[in-house]
Image 1 (cartoon, rainbow, N blue to C red):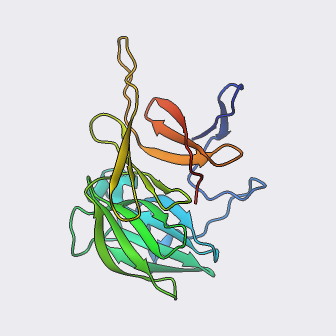
Image 2 (image 1 turned 90 degrees about the vertical axis):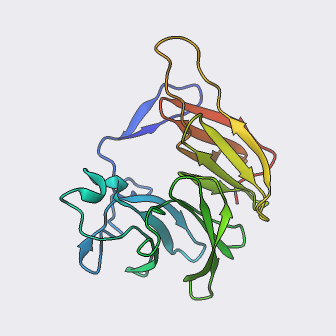
Length: 225
């Protein structure tokens, strides 16, 4: 289910049965559901390149039963690209067990692609002229879910394990600071765990953070990429 939040208005349901890509007019269009004839496990996060190509992560976290679930068809988790109706596998965890992909984002100039890999690691690839990726490197020892990049190239990545927080990292990999989400008082204490984030507001300088039972917003000096 997808909810819709607007300032000054009550929370409303945008879509009862989510799971499909939506057009602006509300129509559903399936861009990809299989790779080499086998069903994708669970598309997790997505980013769109300026040429219209769609890059997304796929992992067993979307399957009932996970890696041992009866519906699993692909023996690996992967990073994919969909362009001109074709799906291409760009990278997988075949040789790196435990580094399942999750959050995904481009640098402002689209020279780099960032992907979180498992719990507590973010990888960075060089984006090639043909749209493929190469030269994987560990960017930071943090990040395990959603991720976004601002116009200056700073990376905002959530650490969902433990207390909810958002790491802010420079394009060079320097940890600039951490946004620690407030822990609500009272019993039963609500669970606050950063899971994903997105830029919003008219100037794209509002950072919205989903946190299990809450939605937080922080105003920033830099806008989205």
